[in-house]
Length: 434
Image (spheres, rainbow, N blue to C red):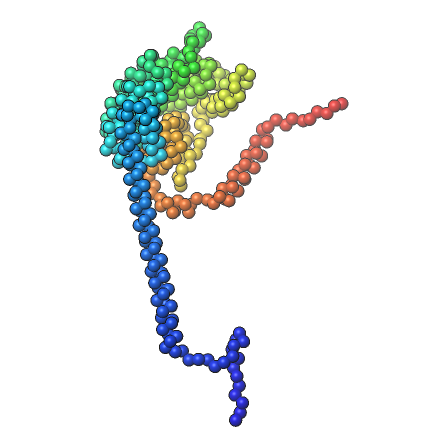
């Protein structure tokens, strides 16, 4: 018989090929079933994870609201320290989250607590209560609810604001809070003008007299006058054209006297207010002509290039930076625009009106300003940003650049900035000995 040839398989294995048996098919079926069960269990686990995360968020929200209720109850505690802590806790919560539904149901309770703290508290507690009143109005927005709150608190604000015997820090806080609450919640323009007259009764005391003599005012009182001036400028942004004309005729010739004040914050506030008033009056009357325009420009230029050695370096640096922009506004009607980025949006501050409004809100909201720009309907309406954009957290995370990309971008920006600044730096040449 001829010798049978052996077939050699790949990989060095030799032998006959066995046919496909029923046992193999049962093993394959079992493997398919096991993989299917693994996929099903994975899907179930994903669903459970989502369910658990939703329950966790719900529990966290309940705990947060419970803490807020405790804070509200603690604002009427006998201990001043407890009341102060409760006010600070409510301020932090309102500055960092949108709590409209929770607050609107309890707005009068919170208002009563603020009123009690303003009347019976002292110093720091009154300041915290005044700030909380502003945050409450920002949360409620411009409407009937905030009007009810402000109607209750406005007489208290005015009483403390005008009381020369009251705590000076409380008066400073009430001057700032009264301005912002009036902007948000006042519904009668005549009441706005009356509030502006209250502010005028304060900051005009810092005017340098016509004979050149300066009023003797202590630093704390000067800060009160500065706060009143900034609140007055804030309300100036919502005045009618006819009232702006009357204000310009009355105050534009006197406001430059504040530029001679010894306090740097007062000088800066006066300069920004002058730039704001010029912007508003030019919008109303494009052919507006100021009689002492050249003298004012010389005064602003002197402050923009101030080199007096008796002033601190930080004060001079801040002053020069601001008054360069103020001088451009008065001479050319120009404004150095600034871009604010938040989430996937951006807002351009391109006028003194927007700047004064943005600074006023940021003073109370602080680091939560970007969040409020993104989610607070009232603030978005003030800056004409439209309704809030709903973006999924996963999509927002995908849009963020990586850490390496941010590092490379910052390095390139630093290099370009250094090159640009080197052109304007002094080139000192070493002089050797001859």
